[in-house]
Figure 1: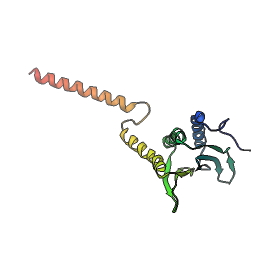
Figure 2: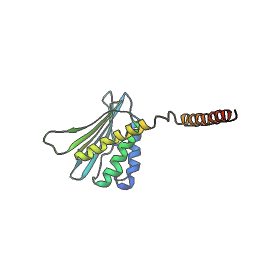
Figure 3: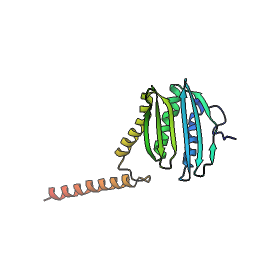
Figure 4: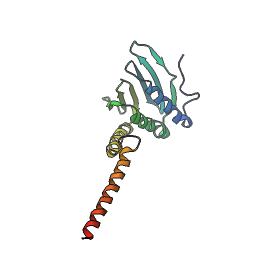
Length: 179
């Protein structure tokens, strides 16, 4: 019997709940078991299949979901899902596969634990848009070099150093003006 990630059909109302449940499944990934996420878009329908496969070949399948594939699906489910995966899972490979004689593309990600995440049937622009999420994340990460930990240590120490330099500058100015 397949396990269900959500109680109802997949709709706009429960996209965020579904995203969190998918992320929780991906957090179960290890070197001994891999997650397979396969989304196929065909005739404005999205069919989502999710499985966990262990090294010994044992497979745990979750209930397939079929939902409308429209602008809301892309902007409210796919983009937030890819962003959250990019933020919480180490992705080693991400690319777009374009088959010869095909007008559609496949977006693919592979994690450090060999989890495979594929979305088939995307337009080239949609696939490139999903891939660009990683470029945006890398730019954002490179601009936030100051924050080394979540306790704000670097930010606090920078403020202390700044006040110290201002204080020393004032003392030097006072010493030279009093002569």
